[in-house]
Amino acid sequence: MTPLEKDYLFVYGTLLKDTGHEMSRFLLEHAQWIGDGYFYGKLFIVNSFPGAILSDQHTEKVYGSIYQLSNTIRVFEVLDSYEGMDPHSTEPDLYKRIKVDTYLKDGSTLLSWVYIYNLDTEHLEQIHSGNYLAP
Image (cartoon, rainbow, N blue to C red; front, side, top):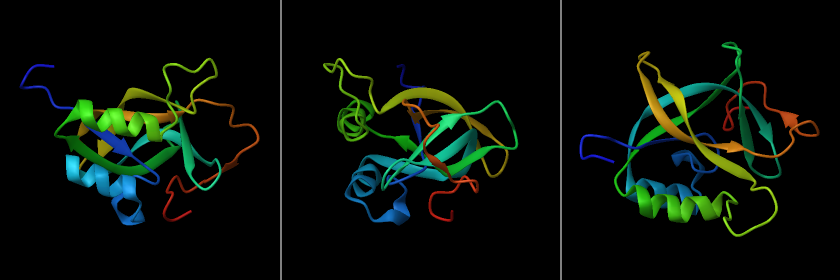
């Protein structure tokens, strides 16, 4: 990454600043909140946390917040583990981290890292509002 490149992270669940979760506080210490927005996807309840998948339908949105990371390597060391990503496991990871076009309320687009749910969603309840905090 060159000094001019910026890493953004889109969060939609327990990492949102209004959850009070310890990992959301960790993120706030290592990133700057840019704004609220969305990406095209579907949101599901997995257990006591949500999981999102991508969608080609522009009517299906997952709402959350976008952060600019100040220490990308450190943030992803901690969050990848929290999100169930284990490079040494032979089982599929719970999430995969990929870059996705995300959209701020003002219409601008940012290419952001997003943790996408990596397992089958057929048995999960969908959050049709796309908003974890306001289902």
